[in-house]
Image (cartoon, rainbow, N blue to C red):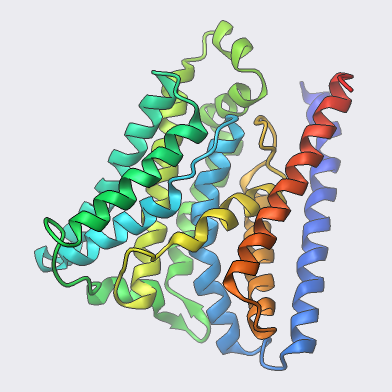
Length: 322
C-alpha cells in the first residue's frame, strides 16, 4: 500500500501544478484586460464569490467521490437562505439554525432515498430540486411569507471584511474547508468514501456500511450548500427564489476541473478549491467582456461534458475496455 501511495503522489502534485498554472494564466490575462483586476477591491469581490462556490463544490466533491451527484445543491442553498431571512425576527442564532436545519433535512432525505431505497442519485436530487422550487414558490406566498432581509450578523459575515480585502466569509471557508480536507485525507470515513466510489461491491463485501456512509455524504453536502446559501444571502442583504440558481453547474465544473472523477473513487477537495478559483477568475473575465449569463452556463456545461468524456475514456483505457 505504501508503494502505491508513493507512486501516486507525483501524479497528484503534477495535476495540481497544472491547475495552478491555469489559474496564474487567467489572473495575468485578467490583469491585462482590466487594469483594476489586481486591486484590493477586486480581490475582495473575487473571494466573496469564490467562498460560497468552493463550499457548494466541496459537497459536490463528496457526492462525486462515491459515484453520485447532487443536483439539488443550488435550491438547497436558496431554501436555507430564504428560511434564514424569513425567520430573522426569531433572532439571528435561531434563524441560522433553522436555515441549517433545512439543509440537514434535505440531505437526510436525499441520502436515505439514494443509499437505502437505491433511487438513482441524479433522478433523486433533480426531483428534490423541483420539489424545493415548488415549495419555495408556494411558501413565499403562504407559510414563508414575510420580509426576507438577512440579519445584520449574517450580512456582515457574508459581505463584510476583516481587514483590507479579506472578507469574513473566508474564515468560514477556512474552517469548513480545512475540516473537509482533513476528513478526506486523514479519517476512516474519508477512506471509506474513496473505497465506495472505487468499487462499491468490494467495499460492501469488505464489511463497509455503504448506506451509512452515503447518507453522511449527502447530509454533509446539503449542510455545506446551506452554509453557502446563507453566506450568499448575507452578501446580497436579502434573498429571493433565484438566489443560488447559477451555482449548480459551476459546482460540478469546479469539482471536475479539480480532478474529481464523475465515476467516483478519485479526486479530492484541494483540486476542487483550485477549480473554484479558476471558475471565479474566468467569470470575472467574462463579465469584463460583457458575456451573457446564458453563455456562461453553456461554457460551464461544455467543460463538464468534455472532462466527463475524458474521464470515461481514461477509465476504459485503464481497464482495457475499448
